[in-house]
Length: 590
Image (tube, rainbow, N blue to C red):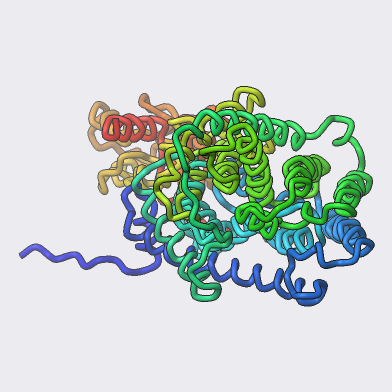
C-alpha cells in the first residue's frame, strides 16, 4: 500500500509553502496576524496623540489649536521642528527616511526589509509633528509602523522575501483601515499606491489584514469613521458641469502641491537646521491668524462638511494648508500628507460649492456636497489613486448615490494633475529613483515567488580533480548538476550538467587498468558549464534575476543558513529556469 504523506505543519514547511506562488492559505494567516499587529500599533499611536492632547491642550483635544493662546500656538511648530531635527540629525541620511515614501522604497529595492532606526524615528516624528502644530497627519506613520512591524515578524521567522512583500501590503492596508475605519479603501490604497498590482493571491491576505485592523480600531474607538459625514446628496444633474469645473480647479491645486513638495535645488542645498526653521516659521506665521492650518485639521474638515466654516477659514485652509504642507515636505521634514490633503480638498470643494450657489441660486447642491467631492478629488489627484479615493468616499458616506459625481470629480482632477505635473503621483515623485521598478510586468511576476519554488535541488558537490570511480559515484543519485569547487574557500563556482559527465564516462569506458588513481579534470570534460554566485534561500526570483544580470552569470547556487560556517547549499537556480517560469506564468494568466 502506498504511504500517506502527512501535511508538514512545521515552521520549515510553512516557509517552503510560502515560497510558491499559490501559498494562499499561508499568506492569509500572515494577513490576519499583520492586521492585528498593525491595528494594535495604530491604537497605541492614537493614544500617544491623545496623551499629548491632555498635556498641552485645554480640552485634551490634540486638534484644538484654536483654543491655545496665539503665542503658544506660534511657538509650538518651532519647538516641534527643533525636536524632530535633534532626533534626525544624529542619524545618517538613510535613517531619516520614514513614511509612505520609505515603505515604497523598501518594498521596491529591499524586498520589504525595514531598518529598526527608521521605525523608531517614525514614532517620534509622527507624534511630535502632529502634536507640535505642523501641518501633518497620522496616516503615514500608521502605514510605516504597520508595514515595518509586519515584515519584522516575517524577518524574525526567516520567511521568504515574496511573503515579506505581501506583509508590506497587509501592514499598509491595515494602517489606513485602522486610521479612517475604511477597510476597503485600505485594501485599494495598498494595491494601487504601494504594490501597484492586482492579483487574487495579493488581494485576499490584504483584505484580511485590513479587516483585522478595522476590528481592532473599532473595539477601542467604536464603529464610526474618523470623519463624521452628514447625509449628503446631489440635488440635481444640473450640478454636473460645475462639479467638473471644480474638479479641474482641484486638479490644478493638486499639481501645485506636488510641484511645491518637490522642492528647489537652492532649498535642498541648505543644511537641515535652516530648512527646518523655514518650514516652522512659515507654519507659525500663518497660524497666528489661522490656527486651522495646524495639525491634521479634521476638526476644520468637520466644520466644512457641516456648513459651519467661515469663508476666510476655508481660503486659509485650501491655499495656506496646501502650501504649508508641501513646503514642509520640500524642506525635508518627513510628515504625513494624506490627512492634510483630504482637509485641503474639503475646503477647496466647499469654496467651489459656495461659488456654485452664487452662480446658480436655485437648484444648486449644498456646498457640503462639493466639500465631500473635493476630498476625494484631491486625494485621487495628489496620490494618483482614483480607486482608493472613490472607495474612501463610499465608505465615509455610506451613500452609493454620491459615487457617480465622485467618479467624475476624481477622474477629472487626477487627469488634470497628471498632465500638468507630469508625475506618477506624489509618493513616486518623492522616491530617489523615480519610476517604480515593480511597474514592469516581468519584475512583478518574479517578485511573487521565492527561489525554492524554481530551483533544482538534485545536485552533488565535488572538487575539480576526481578519479573515474569517484566520478561514477557522483552519478549514482541521478543528480541534474555537478557543482565543482575550484577555489580555496571550498565555494562551488562552476556547475556541470550531470548528463554531460555521464556521456563522457560512457564514451571513454576504458578497460580496467593498473592506474585506477588517475585523476580526471572536470573542467576539461566537454559539456555545459555555468559560472555561479551565491544567493540566499529567502530571495525572490526578481532578486535572483537582478543578481544574474549584475554578475553577468547564468546560474546561482542557493545558500541556506545565516552563520558563515554553517551555510549549506540547497540547490541551483539558472536563468533558463527563471525564464521558463515567467513564460509559464505569463501564458497561464494571459
